Length: 230
Image (cartoon, rainbow, N blue to C red; front, side):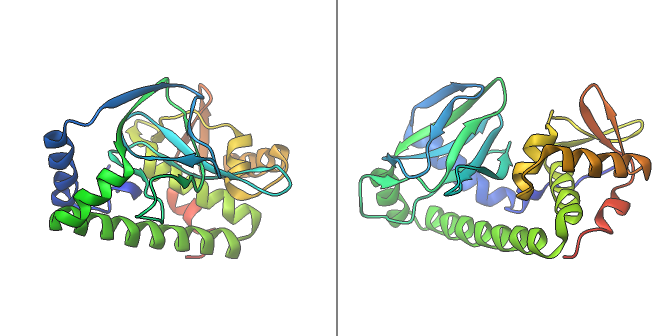
């Protein structure tokens, strides 16, 4: 059974451009442990980070102090590019936290990165594609979250987990990453994890999912996607 990953929308050649740049540049690779933060929303930072290996999560904090999750990343890609190309220090747009046991990331001085981008046309094209795809993803995710109600929002997030972490097993597709109902609630803007519990139980009763060792197995993705207005 083939799964099309949501974060594989850039083709191989685009990513090869980025790989070639990193290999020839000799940039340092840092290792961060689970639950450690790479950046904090609103705190100045001077680096561009590119995920080499591991799983990270991006999130923002509301004015009320509630955390709202944005997405998981588990593939080779740029973590974030900040809007200002000329300043050496800029405010980070979101929190970045390591969710795997450890993560490895390339760490590049942002002013040097932008000099290289402006000098190298293939890299410049990749960055433009990064912005375009990131914008399209954000717009699509917001549309799905706003139009589908709470249950549809939970189904939207399960579908994204399916595309990001899914791997075939005998019973269906295993979401091979442990995600709590509290974390799903933070992706969906739901204040109570107990509300997500009820929705998860509904999907279990409809035989769309099952749980195994605190991980979710999707047994009927079509049923889940029927609840998503795209």
